[in-house]
Amino acid sequence: MSQAEVHHINHPLIQHKLTLMREKDRSTSSFRRLLHEISMLMAYEVTRDMPTQLIDIETPLETMQSPVIDGKKTVFVSILRAGNGFLDGMLSVVPGARVGHVGLYRDPKTLGAVEYYFKMPHSMHERDAVVLDPMLATGNSAVAAVDRLKETNPKSIRFVCLLAAPEGIKNFHEAHPDVPIYTAAIDRGLNDHGYILPGLGDAGDRMFGTK
Ligand SMILES: O=P(O)(O)OC[C@H]1O[C@H](OP(=O)(O)OP(=O)(O)O)[C@H](O)[C@@H]1O
Ligand SMILES: O=c1cc[nH]c(=O)[nH]1
Image 1 (spheres, rainbow, N blue to C red):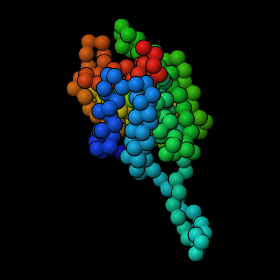
Image 2 (image 1 turned 60 degrees about the vertical axis):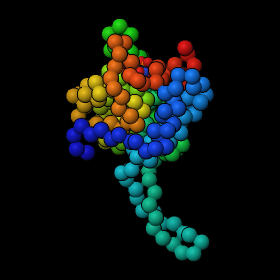
Image 3 (image 1 turned 90 degrees about the horizontal axis):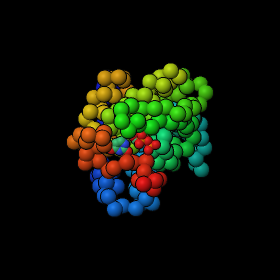
Image 4 (image 1 turned 45 degrees about the vertical axis):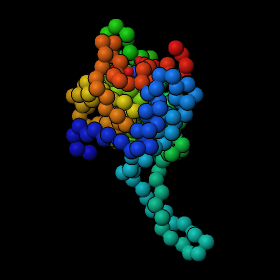
């Protein structure tokens, strides 16, 4: 991968569903279903260059060599809580993937990321990591998650979000220029409380109905 890549995935199906998710009166169940659908669609782009290997199979007519992916070599890393909304859809597309979790919350005053949980699969040096969090706002959570993930030495890392603020992209790539970002939208900026504008509000609260 070259340095500091940002992939803006602006497929019409994704953009349509994202518009629905942004609407403030969208129900919790609808919000969750849309995120699931978008994450399945984004999985296509994020896994586009996944390595395949040829295996021998028999069709009803003859034998052939045909490509398969080794899903076990992929680890989806969900940044709790909201990353779990992305995880379901990604796992529908790559069911053999392993899963790691990083528990982080934003301190509402400093907007710094506070870690409360970290668990990865074994043999991370053999795995390609895909970090999942719908929101890249200040970027502090994503930077902290990737800082910790790099301690486990995965083969590669990419970061996938739904909405990114320009401030978050800048902060993230200053810390991790080697990690490409995949996002469905780049919004205008942040408000005084670190929320993305126009955004979609608090992703975790909307997904889990906690507000
Ligand atoms: O880029 P940042 O400024 O760090 O903001 C992004 C973080 O904020 C949200 O999580 P939150 O802290 O609200 O925790 P939650 O997912 O448990 O609700 C979101 O899911 C990201 O993890
Ligand atoms: O707009 C934002 C910013 C951070 N976290 C969210 O869930 N939403």
